[in-house]
Length: 421
Ligand code: DGY
Image 1 (cartoon, rainbow, N blue to C red):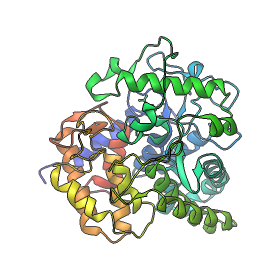
Image 2 (cartoon, helix red, strand yellow):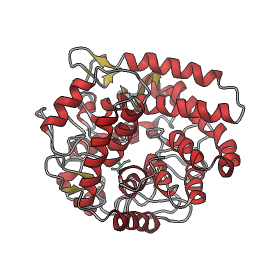
Image 3 (cartoon, helix red, strand yellow):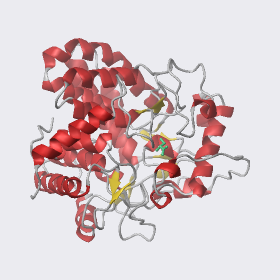
């Protein structure tokens, strides 16, 4: 590999320091000026490679925004910024949580990174794990209470999946009629080329769903009964499964009774099985309102190993998809007519997803695939920088630059010098 890994390591650390706003890290300057939930958990993983104390603080700041019902918002607004839309006023969440925030959550990767950070120094992490454990437990309970459909974990807004404009939601999005959404000004396209971002069609529906939740006062029971958008997501299901297993490890180590966590793991395993689409021969998203599968082989399907499933049925898809694309793993099937290589979650490859897929493959004994994916991701970053995501056909950097989670994944996993823990 023609790269100076040491220089790239230093650049990655510099990005994490530059994006540090004091106790939390923004995903990138400008485009995302607040604390994002899963971005922040990845940031902690990266920070743990050189500043363990700061890594713990990142997670503690994230959990400081937890709502009384257990939900940890997908955005925490520690300091207002007019350069982002929608802000807390649009969400209408005033009074719901201790920090101004959005009204939805995001993929719960935090417990998995807490376990890895703790593994680096269990003595130093002991008191911090003990303080975080009940908060993580209550967040996971919120998922099982309000997002589980027979163990398959749903989203009530595409932003909850973290994979905003994935074709996985196209069917459910087409069922929404955002006619009364009103006028609003997007800010994202002032920072990034519009061809790399969701379309206006998508944005109207995103904003309409925020207005819908606000009208219901973010009442989860009302949302579950009435929300027109409710889709079971393989990504969230597998990520929660992984996080639940890590929570069980943490709980056991500090002497907690983990029997409930074990029951949730069993329920999630049953739920994951309901997301297998036999016709597609892949895990797939399923619209709860209509019962229909999305028909999408997305990168989320390859998280089955990260979820701890011993399942070799996805290997056929790995071989097919990785063979037709230069830089795996594309966020959407490159042989699908909906594949769009630079538009956010409709084709680009994401270092964070590759890290989750790769570490999952490693655990599942698929070391050759995992090693290849790690080297491919390292080359992608070395050649194209620490971009938010990349065109998987030629590696062109896309979205925001100097990106926290790409830097974090470099330090913790992709770099030839990475400890991978
Ligand atoms: C955005 O603003 O694009 C985010 O993905 C929403 O969380």
